[in-house]
Length: 83
Image 1 (tube, one colour):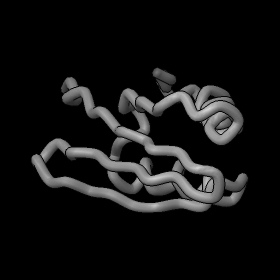
Image 2: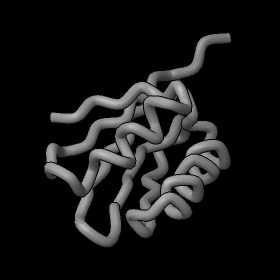
Image 3: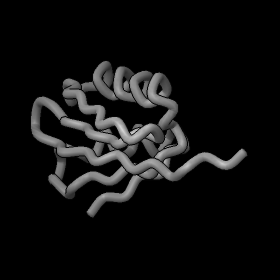
Image 4: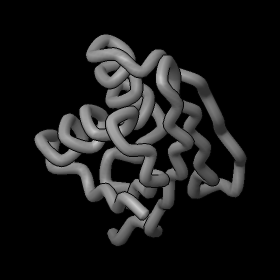
């Protein structure tokens, strides 16, 4: 069985990051996480709960604010594009 490609948008700021996805059922989901190692792990768990661990994530270039999150996601073998 093939899974539809899911895309997750990430808006990164100094102290938090907002995420949004449209799941396979067409339902919009969003959440705000602290931009900390704990928040990064919480985000990973949220992706898993929404069956989106194989999604393509896209985040804006925000200099140092998004660097740790992008690195964390890449280390988890999650496809992340920084634009």
